[in-house]
Length: 238
Length: 132
Image 1 (tube, rainbow over the protein chains, first blue to last red):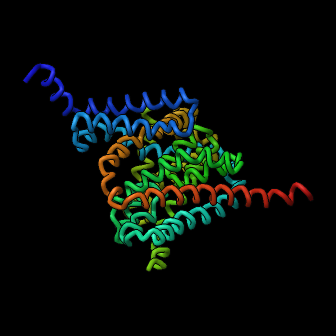
Image 2: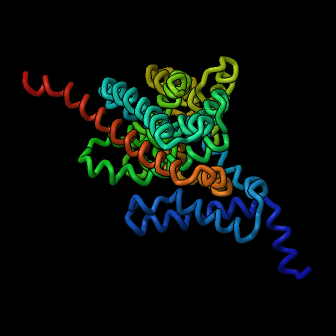
């Protein structure tokens, strides 16, 4: 064994290496996003994932080994979700004035998210089990996997679709809202959080704090409503 | 900062415990978010009691700073899970292009429907006040 290789073998097994790689990929991705003036297509999550996946692929590192290091970053998702209470409280006056639009947008958005997935799934002739995994695609990963599992879908497939939905929403929300000429940051944020869960919320916080606060509310409410609506919606599925 | 993080983690811990105990279809961190919100409301309801009962970092804005620091880097936290998804794209490929098309169309429809409803209701409610 050459000395270089021995060092690599040692380092590749410690959490330190993969934690550093994750942070480095994010720093580079964030720089790229900044350089493009936070252009929606230069989504830092997408770039950082692509960079990390490329490193894992070229070094032949199993995901379990990578996750030993990256789990420290992954863990922070929980505390960050709790911290959503802080902008929500800070903008409580704006939030309380927006209860009616929020309630209406929540119901319409949740029904469209579920309904469009089911109708399109049937139209494209997708197998029933896959449609079930597709139904909770707009809610946060943990809830979506739970819904898919309870209703007889595939939790892994559900997680992949949830992530894909998050990316799609995070990238498209800004250009789409510009086309629709919606400038209200409350509406833009709420839509991002409802349709694209945490990834959409992360995008909203990059744009505007009010948008972020509303995205956080939408994320929480839609997780709750989808868990209730998904089993009902699936009874219409033949 | 450690104290602020401790409070946030404690809220999450209580949230997880409540989620498991009640079997609610809501993840623990979201219940933790509601608990932290409750804490902030109660803290400011009793401005005189606060400094006596609570440590300074929880009152002077450091808690807010810690939370916002976490949220500013929310994007980073999706990288580990996202990198795992790349290895599982095979389950997606098995369904062909249709699945990708459905995700795209459905997400655009959801974004548009949500934002348009929000703006429409907000406008409809604001209108009567503008013309009394």
